[in-house]
Amino acid sequence: MKQNKKLQVWLPLLFAVVMVIGMALGYKLRDNTQAARSFFQFSVKRSPIQEVLDLVMLKYVDKVDTDTLGNDAIQNMLTRLDPHSSYIPASDLGAITEDLKGNFQGIGIEFQIFRDTVNVLNVLPGGPSEKAGLAVGDKFLSVGDSVVTGNQTTESIKKLLRGPAGSEVSTTILRGSDRKTFTIQRGTIPLPSLDAAYLADSATGYIRLSKFSETTYEEFMTELEKLQGLGMHSLIVDLRGNGGGILSEAIDIADEFLDGDKLIVYTEGVNTPRQEYRSRRKGLFEKGKLALLMDEQSASASEVLAGALQDWDRAEILGRRSFGKGLVQEQYELSDGSALRLTVARYYTPSGRSIQKPYDKGADAYDNDIIDRYQHGELVNADSNKVSNGKAYKTNGGKTVYGGGGIMPDHFIAADTSILSRSVNAVFRNNTLSNFTYLYYIGHLDQMKRFTDAANFAERFNWTEADWNSFVSFAAKDSITLKNLPELDKSFLQERMKGLLARYRWRNEGYYQVVNMEDDVVIKALELL
Image (cartoon, rainbow, N blue to C red):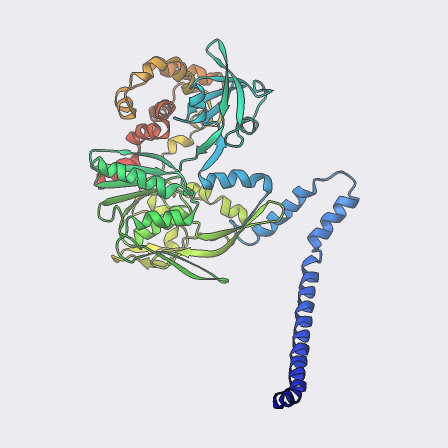
């Protein structure tokens, strides 16, 4: 009975408390709902850009590709931010992604369209095409139901040959005078970022990286271990022409060269807090002598690696001032399958220098920076370098370095200006050089097979005067005059053709083993090491 009386006393109070809590929650939910509705209304409100596009689509006098107009509008907006924020249409995203991913789906060949015919230049060892029986020198007549002789483009051929791994494609090729049919099962084809790795002398290794993709560190470590097993004590890392890629891959490689807990790079932006990346494990090559090669096309992740090694006085940097890209992009996927690469931070070397060159004079001035360097003599004269106008910093050992415009090398090596002459430039621009070399290779297969490896070929093969005269006549068909060419230019072209021959047989590693024998930067690096 007492319990019932207590319940009668407390029950009204309990209901009152519950009612107050319910009212408070109700008001809170109402506020949140109104805020959400307000945000939703704001988010669906059409921007002037969208309104203009809609009006063009509805009212314009002629038919217009509004997707292209929209893409252009976005690109123009981003150019007002910085040179490296960019919009990637859905149609282009796949090719860009596969390059950084390090593989694609296809049949595993390299080809070139020569005289309206698709010629096989290289066949990936162990790849789908080699398993099916294709060989260097084969000429494609058809792919599936499509005839591919005549007016074709590289992109149209790629679309026919590529497809999901496991799918099949039927091809008809011409080998000599024989027609052959092959059914090829497509597979996952690697896109290596490591072009070459070999011993340049008995104790010095050479590794060339063309980019930083998802597989770069793994490729690098595999070859580094092989070279150490062959007795390597000094190393040349060639980053010339390497435009960068995935930052973490460069950081991991830097970690293999730096001991202890050393800062490799840090990133920071107005809306992005400082993030430090440090060496965190015992590296595979912390003590051996190290040289790093750079040029005006080395950018981004390449500059991160070079900046860290230079600031810690770990490597000798040879070549010319690097590109000067010190901005970090993040990629955001958009609803239509396109993507936005937005600059979110700058990166800084361990000494605190920003490598980003100025971009306040507009996109054209930024894009023409390399041409300006050439015109001011910077590519051939170390004293013409302008980056020394930037802020001075000190390396760990007290050496003065500069920020605000790329990495300055410790040892300047002038560019080979012979490639800039009109005739030499023409044989590259018209594919005359590669076309002649390919035909020579196909016509001398038996001779090429006598060479055991690229080093043996580099030492023993030499062009004859008759070979050179054949090339001069071949170039004349493209309206290129090579008679009375300066001896220096002639030697340069012969060296490049010899490298291409080696590439057909031993791929990129063969090419670099040949051309590096006459490369001033590599020769200087070997002297230093």
